[in-house]
Image 1 (cartoon, rainbow, N blue to C red):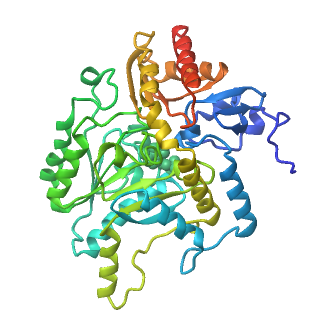
Image 2 (image 1 turned 120 degrees about the horizontal axis):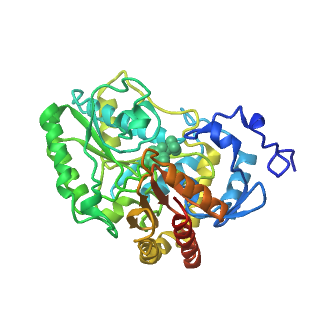
Image 3 (image 1 turned 120 degrees about the vertical axis):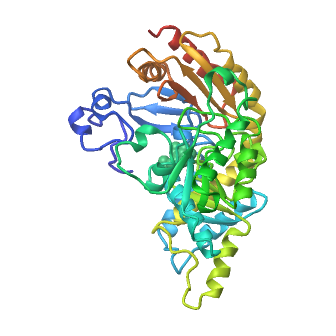
Length: 450
Ligand code: PMP
């Protein structure tokens, strides 16, 4: 078909791998012992050596319907052959309109969607929409943005500014001005081995009141949180915590943003975390599962009233013809939108969100059965996501989990690690036997690990 080097003849010497500066990777180390994937189908990857690896992470939390789904690949192939690209500035094509309608109709009370190419762009777009929304309503003094310690909101300057993972911030200088952070909600002593949401910790939302008092709530535009924090190690919101955040935001006229880049599209057994937790933010960011990871795409979903404020402001201003001066060349790209439509159809036809919900307790029990395994200090689970927290090796943070990752891979199971936490988020098509395989492999590896 083509001479693409997606096969075992590819030269894997460090020299040949040198030019690609890999993201979030210790490049020098990786290139000495590279792990390369050359195909994927359903629940499995195949490595360049021809070994099958069970995917315990849905790629990077994105392939919720499993890999290389026929409906999605067909939609991509047909669309790219028919409409390779079309601008969405002052022009359009049906696929983006259709996808926005379908996504917003999955949620009660949301009516517009702005398209981006990634989660990071979705976050920066949401922050900009929040700032511009207040300005459109004559509250331009609301310029502050509030995030949370340990939060991950991608890699844009907005996202790393409101984000709270130290290493994502501290080598990049001063970042955005006017940003503050609430404390995180994780407490190993009070929440250890919780199945689902911890009972303890709702009161931590009151930290937002401290921040409102400190800066004056009327200067704050938006608060952004991951309803369930993913990349920092899968931290569940304490029961009542998100409700309290919503109440405090309402009291001070602050927009609440849920970053659902991981939790959107079925990860928790519901379409969105909004449905799982019963709390409605004003803006929802999404990506990953929107296209099953097949083609990059993200977006911001807006609650009713947000877009209207822009329309009303534009109506009042005779010199304005555009509601929001923001957008990307590839916003609503036809091939990505086609992938999105086929993905939503797949989720629906195969009942994958219900499937995830049905597997939640089996998954949780299998995860929690590792309590007492060597090095394990905490286990968390919700929907089809889970975390196994390890005791760090003294003086070598992250090493133990990294070794576990490499050894699990050798044994045919892909896990993900962040610091000393193993994070798991399999495709929603997973079978019970495969759930067992993931946790048995992790257990065996941990038992053999120093
Ligand atoms: N927000 C959250 C909550 C995420 O988990 C991620 C990615 N893991 C992002 C934003 C950034 O998404 P992307 O890598 O597509 O830019």
